[in-house]
Image 1 (cartoon, rainbow, N blue to C red):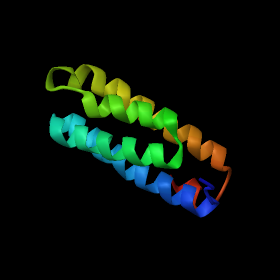
Image 2: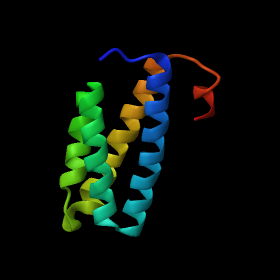
Image 3: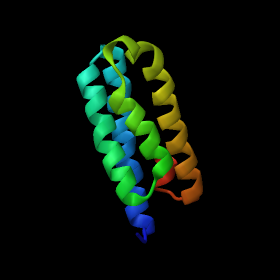
Length: 99
């Protein structure tokens, strides 16, 4: 799939919202919401060819209640690192600088 600058920018903005939701789900111990975001992200990451993000999202989706507080924070950090790297690959932009 050929991804335009605008498509990639919009994709990153949606993932930023997902990251915020993951962080809140982790704080509130909402396992089902945490897993739901993982499921959604893994599907669309695969569609866009972002297989490293797909792998992280699958782990998020599969996390259980007992592991949420231990593994969840690690996976949220991996998700955040992926976003940071993706923004850096996109290059400088006034739109990105706000993140």
